[in-house]
Length: 195
Image (cartoon, rainbow, N blue to C red; front, top):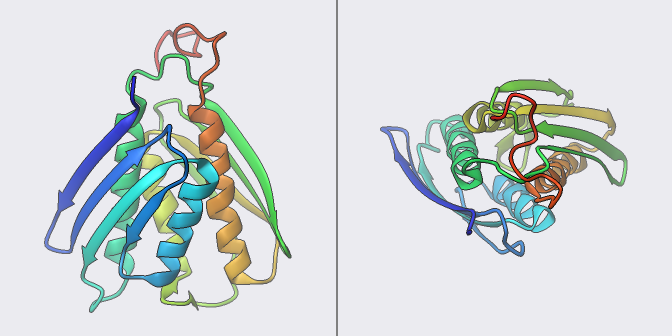
């Protein structure tokens, strides 16, 4: 059974189209209007083996906040919808990922309950055209829309580009592990019987 979600979301601030295949090969087609954010989403797709198409027309004349936050809402919703009943998935995933000076930790629980913890301080306001404070807003939106526990921690790092990229790649690898199937799990991985 294919685990694919296709969504559109239109508000006065953004118009977003997303297609996500959890069982892809890492192909992406991304256009958010923010070059560095495109690069991060392409890395998420490639390193998580997710096929991701995302097109955003946002009010970038204001700033990038609405585009980045709303993309997190739509991506999180797509993850939740593509997972379906969650039968057979590992549920948990984690990654400690190095990128030069940066070392990022990410842990995911696809439990159906949103919770978000983010421990990372950036030393610059922007990387390219992406406001660094929006990294936290993006992952907060993903976690709450997907209904996942998501913990992100920067263990070490000094280059903000490397730090952000390590976070996106660690999230990709942790999510890939969590959505992966395990033949030993015949229902859902919960003593409650539901996720």
